Amino acid sequence: MSLLGTLSSGVSALDSFTTGLDTVGNNIANINTTSFKGADVSFADTYAGLGTQVQGVNTNFSQGALQSTGVSTDMAISGSGYFIVKDPASGAQYATRDGEFHFDSNGYLVNQQGFQVQGLTGGSNGTAPGTLGPIKLGTPPTGTSLESAAIDTQGNVVESYSDGSSATTNEVLLQSYSNPAQLISQGNNLYSNLSAAGPLTTTLGAGNAPGQGGLGSVQSGSIEQSNVDLTQQFADMITLQRAFEANARIVTVSDSILEDVVNMKTH
Image (spheres, rainbow, N blue to C red):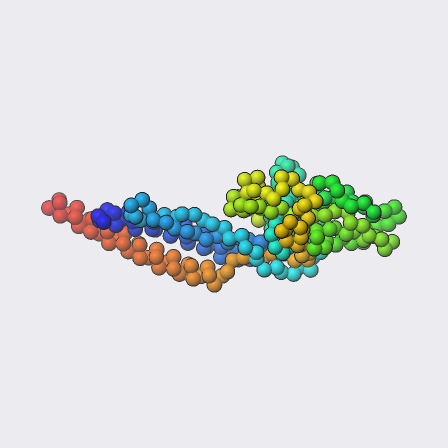
């Protein structure tokens, strides 16, 4: 390998390991981010083996631990699947594992950005929810008022009224993807590019109920924590740091030798 090859190899390594350190730093920064999925960097040699390059930054979609919050409208998915939320202003839909939801002033179940959780709605006493759309609290029977709304492991929203009666008015649906690596993070724990990720079904329906078709169940009163392993991240950081320092030394030495060569030719 020529001296210039040594220099370019070292520079390529510095660039690649910087990406690795950036990824580790982002993982650690999001250790407390709800439902955050950590990423790993893979490396490959370059053409003719002169250096290294980033082969890919791969998201780890494994499930994080579930944490109880005591908030009845919070939901965590135990198993496979994503909630689908819709921006009422633009109509854009996103997938998310972040189930930190609440009912807004209009009765819609929404996330922290005000995006509406999708599912089956329109149910009442004796009538199952069957209309695809945003989850929304129903109208209490005449002469009653809404006392509470609870969500079970199948995503059913059960409303209880002041006269002691109850009704299943909505059902939260989930979506699963055959190639989640195609999902694109949009920030705020949201993912776009849903069609390219290979959705389980073209449109949401009865087959998207939690606990069916390989989909996970819903745990109300809980949220999913980040899946980042802090111990592993520190180990990766130390390895990348040492590799960076070693290649920085290669660059420094190569540059010094090149300078000596240049000085020899000028004398």
